[in-house]
Length: 128
Image (cartoon, rainbow, N blue to C red; front, side, top):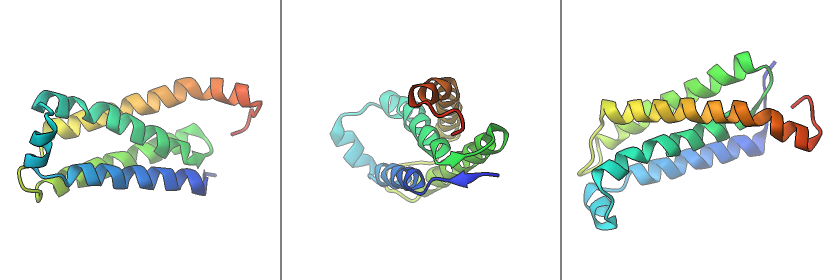
């Protein structure tokens, strides 16, 4: 049985809204920020690692269910985000960006899984 922690789910939704805001910036605005294409593309990995972390944190239950659920939600969001960018002036949807998003999702889930036992031990909570 999977349980959703409402405030954590709210954090994940807020994170998605922030990503959509960044994705909605026209290409000329990004150029004004001085971000190179390399840095912009590199940013996909930590951005989506964070998204995977907060999304996975929103679910409580067996890892065999919550991990694929969180990964699926994040990957679907990544696809929708890339599609959304195809409508933003000066931005494009790119398979390479989607692959970087997927790499970030895997990284975020791996970090969450690796650090979760430590956090739970510090909290003294063997169940969550």
